[in-house]
Image (cartoon, rainbow, N blue to C red):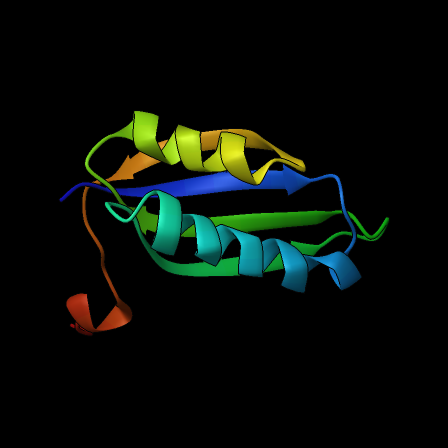
Length: 94
């Protein structure tokens, strides 16, 4: 199954993100079960604006976009298919 990284900028502050996260999970579990939300990294800039870097498994990018449309309260900055993962262990010291 393809995996995607989705970078989003939210129209809500950090205090509102738990409700957004619950809604995101609800969409995946009840409306779009073909998607798996793997994890997200959340950052807050100096102005309090929230951005997320989320990893999803999904059959198509269009389904990931549908999830975002149903979630609302944000814009998609980018969606990219993940072609691989690496860790420092993949690059042993010489």
